[in-house]
Image (cartoon, rainbow, N blue to C red; front, side, top):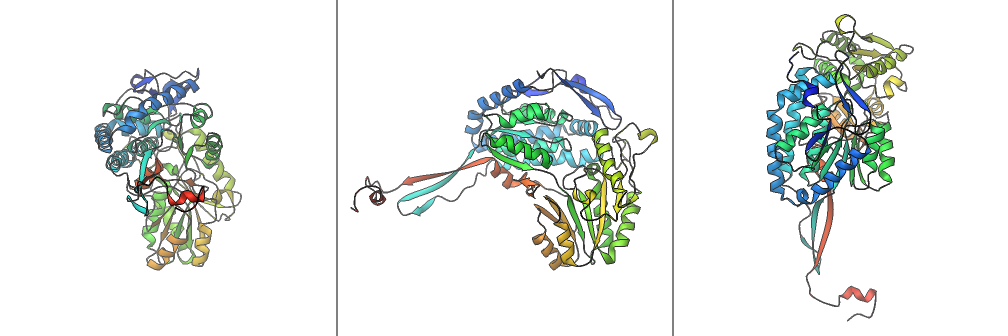
Length: 505
């Protein structure tokens, strides 16, 4: 393994980043940070308590006037320096992300880190584009204009599957719009969020504009969401927890952005490029060990291609190399924890009663037995209403089901509570056009599955939440639209006053 730094030494001052510096949590409880590839503890830190959340929110509140009052150009310059600082830290960030999450290093180096750097560069540019409706006389007697203003202190909660990218998705649009922010990463994966905040400070972001509280959701998370000085909450995580976040946020009537679970359908029509669909399904199902809310989890394949698709996916999955994340030949690393591995195994084991496990369906033995590994798994024969088809598994598991007509394929794709992402595979532009219109998700890929870009929005429908990450649409989530109306007549007695008192002049 490429040992770049000692985690405990690097974060010896603590795993809270408040008002520009690392400090220790005050909850009285500790949290172990574990390498899921080995099961070994790599760090222990003191969890944030409610007092730490209060301190972080207070720091963000005090930093807000100056940061929101900076010109768009000044905020843009800071974020450009931030992007450069992240690029300088790329090697360390990739190492820490793989160590903490078990991602293959090639995924961290080629996806997580460059995507986060690009996101910073994008929002550095977006900071200078606070667009609103053109100033004009929409009323004969007034000039109207629209201002976009920062919302205030944003309290965000990020998940454990993409700690660095989720920090970027939460923090960057908020800062670009002039807000200050308190981010709570998942307590088991705080490392790259802390490094992200340190890079921001090094780039010149004012102390207090970005704070990190590493604490448990039921304590630090709920306190942050319910804090009266937090004007907006952005949460990414499971639908079940998202419902609780919404309940807590509602009590203080704050703005809410939710990116929740997914169960992405992968619809293969009978004229699709079979080889492309097979490769796309394996890549889309196994990215980040399947711990991706947009991962391909349900493949619906039109019957003429069904048998060949199943055989092709099974053969390709058999070539996927499961192993040490720091081995450059590794394709698939462990899941985030043994608990998550056991959860995934439970779904598969229960499915054996009503479906066929074609390949995988087990944890590897030998040198990998200590890690939270699970082999790529392909399942067929499951009913549409079964648990394995309807529930979010969050592991390297793909279920394949056949369909006959195009109507049936699209209906099946829509037949879960979720609506985050989907893909349609066909050479027929009319078929794919119909699929993009009728599949009810926030994103539909055509002849591909998974790619994301900073310029385009990411977010769901139905039980997958509302609001967007990335893109100018995300930027708008973090601004308050204000209408400003100027009288242009100079007349003391307006004609409309007669509706309240007196007669027409």
